[in-house]
Image (cartoon, rainbow, N blue to C red):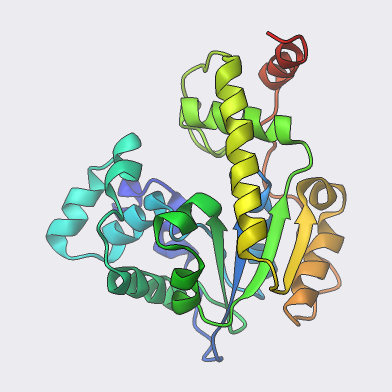
Length: 262
């Protein structure tokens, strides 16, 4: 019954990992929406070696984990939150101690091989206080970063996801989103701002970096390289691509209209 109240079924107990008693280390995947970070995180999860990285500070994740583990009244309230209300309400006003307890709760269920992974969009990091906050939450974390060379494709994908509410291929198809040039332009500006923000924040830190295009071209080699950056020996075979690309004829149409100046 609980699974039916979760917005993301992978937040359910069926996907929890068994603790192995090893010391805890952490890594953070620095990202911007529609950069391929979900694909990278899923591939790392599927190795079984470095935990189950997800956007655990995303309001939707906070909502689902509160539904799972919060006090009865809080569970009831959060289970009824849907759509834009989740982003508008959940997590705002949470104290740092509340967020720390949340991450500790997730770590206890989503770690393997002594590793816990967190996928973190730039705007979520800003929402909770920037690098000083995450350094207190996950001290000495390793950093991985994924970017996308095709920023127009990224902007189109982001705008369509925002408008339809469909962020993953497994989610129900949302409403048709009309093409609006100014909205695509705004997403391009958002991407530039976020990537510039990451550049500033991560300056001077050791960061393993990859592009979405390189990941798709050779996922096995990318996963091995990511694991190597953590000092983890990769298996001979690594999982294949688990997610379905959401680009389609509509994406092609939007590209053509953008190129035509429409």
